[in-house]
Image 1 (cartoon, rainbow, N blue to C red):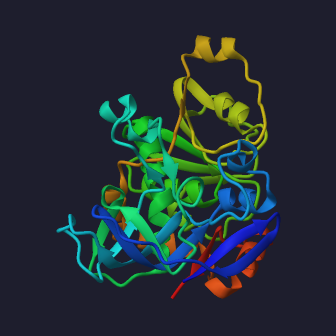
Image 2: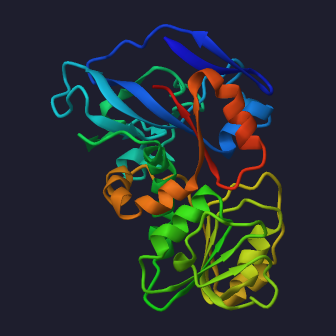
Length: 331
């Protein structure tokens, strides 16, 4: 089968590899679309922690945001049929460690992650997945927007941690994919939603945010919750600074640098800083939410590029885009 590989820093090739076998508890998926994100870009640049920590190496088979149709099921699988549209978890949790036993599967101590380490990515014609990590979308038309279910589950994990109440003021820092998805979901709440983003954000419906700011001047102490979705330099300090006493900073953006904040100020204001590590338990919920926020998802997609032109898809991701998401079409 055809697959796209990052074979060296800044180099993507189309190769032929063996089609995956289907184990008794597995599903083989005919991949339709694969989403690219900042993590894939770090892999392309050779700067990803998955590379520097030795979890993976080149050539690297990428692709952790995906959607496709069931091609084959193992003999132990009776609740999926050929042609069903499915997506699945990036995290393949072990179900045997203490974290899994306690219901914290996103903190599994023996993880494999699709397209990141120890499990082949979805940038290929076919992908093998354990049934426990796959969610059916039913007999729907497969669409590029479905790849956004993967980042959407992390947003749902973050908003559960935020415990937003009616009347709250929420600031979303960063209007990339995660930030924009956060805004799309939060716009359904009876709250005020503002966004802090220095760049143009043409992809956001003006009805989903109350105010849009390009800097945090004059925002000190105004918010009950901040969703930090940028990972940008200084973003954590900004998030803490704009919170009211007792506020929550939901940290979703993964910074590539160390940042200093005043722990005394955090303690005296009773501020909570909560880190979010994926939303492995929210795939069913995200799939149900999908049609309700579909216009916002469509607005996030910049372009759809064929698998054979995967290098140009990365070029597009790295270059100037008016919308955050680049998708590879495998069909």
